[in-house]
Length: 246
Figure 1 (spheres, rainbow, N blue to C red):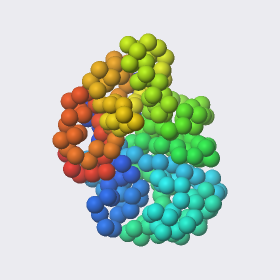
Figure 2 (cartoon, one colour):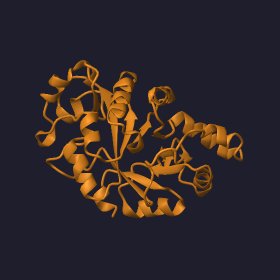
Figure 3 (cartoon, rainbow, N blue to C red):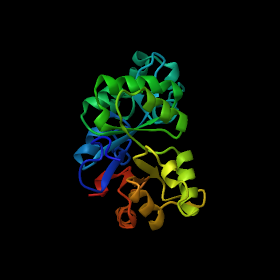
Figure 4 (cartoon, one colour):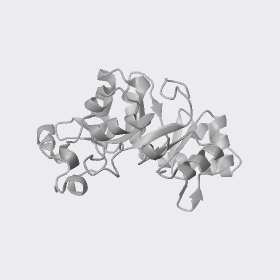
């Protein structure tokens, strides 16, 4: 931990899950308006996923295609940026580029969702010298590690689900090999419970803290649940409704 200044500042962290838009009729998820709205309502970090267009531009978007959000049966990877930007989302917004997200100046939590998005993501982090204000993550250990290897300086990073599983198994075995399982990891971003496993458990969170790792739970939209998790030892939450968390 503390390889960068990404986690400087008081606890708890408040990550805006795809910005702040869920309850708003005119703001699309993952749009610049959603990010700005979240920051205005107290978000300390913005969470977003990263895909790459056909012409290899990193964009901030959750799904691999536009069917759910825009009603368009096209994959991000099959569209050039110009064509993608011609498609309007809720509130007449467009899918933002990673560059536009970095230009906001906020701290970004980036989940690389596809192999082809690795190099475009790394390229923009390098271009903006944004190493201190991004966290790079991925559900894929290989994608996460590849991105970190390509970067010229350290960035904050969170564990893939494979690494979470290995660390939790180590914890249940009394901590055997735990340090190795969490080596070079700054955060665990996990649900309170998944697949019958309760991650929101004081002993597990205490062990993470002792190894300098922050635990952030997703997706938490109830202030009472947020308070319970912070009391257990979480460093922050990822929320669709950061406006309710202050």
